[in-house]
Length: 119
Image 1 (spheres, helix red, strand yellow):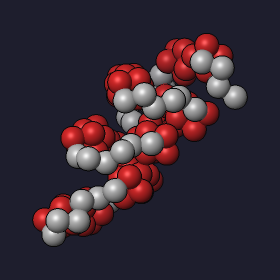
Image 2 (cartoon, rainbow, N blue to C red):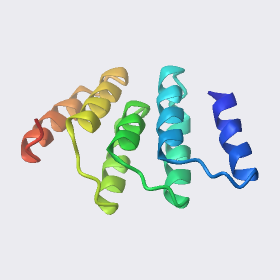
Image 3 (spheres, helix red, strand yellow):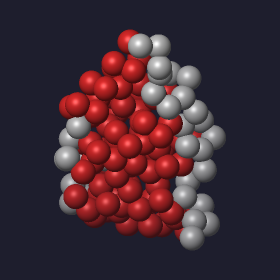
Image 4 (cartoon, rainbow, N blue to C red):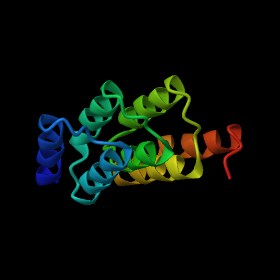
């Protein structure tokens, strides 16, 4: 994960800015390596850059969250950037709630899926 983040920095130094796929893969790698604290930094960097984030990028970000507060922040970001909530983003969010044992938030997310007609 650290090497992937360093490669992203090297890409920027070489005037080859990371694209959506790069951010998505690095977020997924941070999740796999349990580096949940890097999630918000990567999402903020993605938003600050000219990268057009998509559902897959936000789904990876959701899965890499370490607590419910981060999940709600990312949902707020999605709303701000007109990114539709999908089963993928909810799955990532519920998985993060499971990992952090925040069952009440997981139930709120399941109810939210029904409110947003997510299938």
